[in-house]
Length: 165
Ligand code: ADP
Ligand code: MG
Image 1 (cartoon, rainbow, N blue to C red):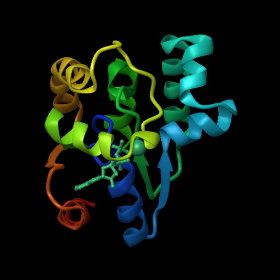
Image 2: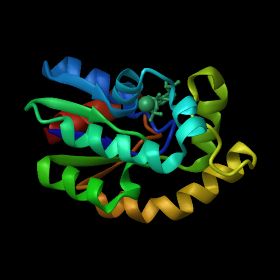
Image 3: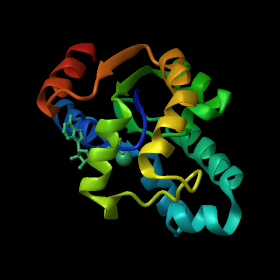
């Protein structure tokens, strides 16, 4: 199992799909699995049931992925639960796609419709990302076996990950 972690916009879905295609592995996106299982969007889940409920669904989904030869792209907050950190480290290789907040904002602003996560704080996107990254950066690093510079071109990142698998 190969897990890709990192914040919104770091390229987890983009990179994960290409890597899976190249390796002939299955591609799984935890946010997409949650959406399919719940039958509603993440925004709706959070609005109707709260973040804690969403986080529990996320842990359940993560632990339900048991097949070999899978590339798993995760939600940005998956590392918040210690249980999830352990599950990923015990079951495979964890890669952190690292990018600074300015790059993340540029990418998210370029396609706002793809950013369906409700705001965590109600602040501007840059302020929110800076605040969230300050909290999460050490956790991403501690959870990952490998840290990859996610500001490189997609094909360069995919090549680096091919060499790791
Ligand atoms: P995530 O799944 O981590 O939220 P996505 O894969 O959805 O991130 O990528 C967010 C946006 O950034 C998309 O528009 C994608 O095309 C773009 N993107 C991803 N990786 C790169 C990269 N290395 N360089 C430039 N743009 C990228
Ligand atoms: Mg994604």
